[in-house]
Length: 555
Ligand SMILES: O=C(O)CCC(=O)C(=O)O
Ligand SMILES: [Fe+2]
Image (cartoon, rainbow, N blue to C red):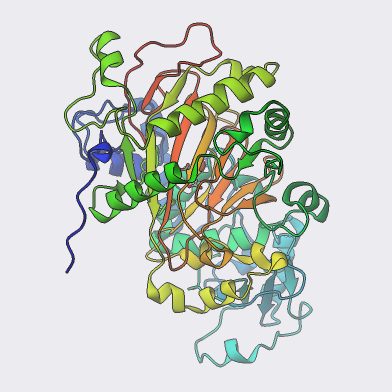
């Protein structure tokens, strides 16, 4: 077997975020956010300090979960206080409790409209009718749900009925063609506002604690019911004529001969800034000279091949939501760090001397500090920026052959035309209860009920994948903030493409890549030094940019 190439010095891990296994399990169990990122003490996944959780919160959460579990064991509907604000257990009418233990998912997709369609079948029984009416009356059927037969009339669906299994009374055909295992829907279902709120992950943690791996089916059910493609007007405004991806793509003037930093030229810079202001994100192709981007891409690949990337971890401790592997690389110049008070990189840290990262940093800093900040001066967010994170390299590994061959993969690859790309979703990537992309989230949940401000203001991502086609999946799907699961745009992770978006305003999801590893490098601009892995941002609009900000790591 060929030897993996050596890791370039520039990519030796600084510290890879995460929590000690014990504290992570604890956080997962009670579904609470650790309040403080622990300071890394070594270069692996373990940190010495466990996250600090106020005892009162921990006890309250544990008690609420215990109460729920007891309620379930007794087969009584959950009647305790909801442990998660925003989580409202759904209770079907009493007569149907216990009857819908086999909500069955099967294959289905809509070929014509591009609107994700969930088709619901049932056995025609009064209980099924009650259940579906209850869903409908609570607005829980979702916009794409369609009954396969009128209530009271059994739905005929030959291939589902032929399985020979005892069917439940209600079953669902989801887009993507994947046959999902049944979930127990007897005591609750999710409320649309839960999806994408600050409590989303604690809620899914909670469901996981009840359902084990089957939580994924619940997620898929909710996702496909409520996913809405971008409206035609929105598509026209964001995607450009005929384009299905690259929303708010900054137009590179054909007259511009400048290869490097063409986006900083006056008129174009105005367009870029106004895209961010108008849409909340902007996309720049050919962001760097090609050889600079290619060098970063090959470093990322080398790091992945040499095995020095570690599993991405949520600050909640949950692992299920993301399928990437991560490597943080220090971008701080050792000399200036030392001058700023001895915050020199520790053993194993890479430095700003990393030749392939230096021009990247210079360009991204220039974009944020010289192009966006002065033009968006009235936007208080950019004025607050004082720090920039180190570089976070990510790899979302190619889906395994089994996933590739599943009906879901087939369904999704057929959907590569513009109207149907929206049919791709996380269901395709699921396996062992984990996502192979990164489920919908915000990079900063500060606006959301109970959300904590992690300090991130602007997310910038440089994509590193040559010849990436739509059939490779892996798009960054951006959602509207106001409406649950309303798609805003999709962006393919093409080499040398940069996307910038507001960390607290644009919910997004990474769709699972197909057949190819997907690489990217992310930097966050923040308003305080405590943001993970941050350093002072020299071009910071804030008057008192933090000098020699410390390094905290949390991926
Ligand atoms: O790689 C991407 O496109 C986005 C990754 C992401 O959302 C994250 O790391 O927070
Ligand atoms: Fe993100």
